[in-house]
Image 1 (cartoon, one colour):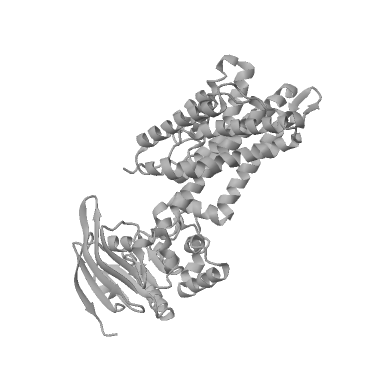
Image 2 (cartoon, each protein chain N blue to C red):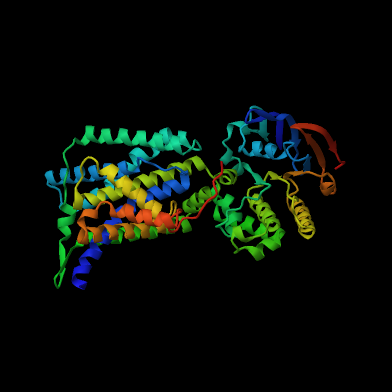
Length: 223
Length: 299
């Protein structure tokens, strides 16, 4: 579904990603594991076009993402939840979730259908819907960011360290939400980053290890 | 007492309306693009020249004088369409994220270019076209006399204020603009064409400044130097209200215009300093402006 080939990214003169190569397959959950500073966030940012790449190829199915401006990538079916949530504080939770739908000019019917689906899979968001984005806790914010990413994630869902800093109860809820999401969308490719391998072992179909900007090992669990 | 205060009040509010159009455009551009456009006042004077020229041409062509009203609006639309996208796409875009010094130098350069351009196109004589003002006549209540055109200015300013609020709060475009103001990067990742939003916001700013200038011509005329004068005043208003605050700009416009009118009436010598004295006072107490939000500076 999404293929990353020989991706090199340079930030302020330092090579942060070196030859990163992997494939996300439809319906598979890939986990990208690495320490802080290993290049997980940079990889996702490069896929979204927030970080310019120096070399390499990004393809979404038949589309060369290198030729697609960053803002147009969500519209191609990529949903992205950044590690630091990045909600719009002055918008309500619901307005935050709907933002990508408005941004890509989704028609009203489809927008309502997806919002309803987000609420079904993440029922806690319905309860918070009218609270300001700036007024939810960090953990709740992660849920909102997940809901927001789901609005456009028809093909690929990118979650950057979703479990980072989550209280155990919330982490459990989040993991269950991911399971429901996987069941509801058996054809979407998931990419989830994490710093410790244990957390995601249960839901990972494939796992990649990233170290100093390089993919070290790839393991595939039997499907 | 009331009879002498009422004309002052109307005078003050009508002045406030004109300042508001410019200051709110400045503040809008700042909040979206994060750049202080020193050339903003030039769009006011270009709008004024455009309106006066178009109005004078209509009169000389023997057209229906009521056409001079749409001519004011047309001038502002024309100036915004001609200069907004072109200048943002070329000069302004280049300065994003480059630091205030570069932004101020570039927009100051732009200001100088636009000022000379106006001298080339419109000459150095002042233009005066007051058909829209004389058409509306005056109203007399007791001993109080005021121009109906002044009431029109006040009404238009309120409409612009309410319209901007509705635009930002209730339209798709407005929501996207608000998102870009809050977080450009995440907006981009969520699918917003932020470059386009910058261009739109800049063009709305140009339109508002040009509209202010066009609406001002019937009462004050237009002459070289108008742009600089307006610019400095708009800066004072935006600073008093708090940069990026739409309602702040409205209230600050009223405060500054009131100060100016009171000065004219009671201490004429202080007429042109009054707005800056108010600004000094406000900034001494609240450096972020009356409605501004203090921001930690990220380097």
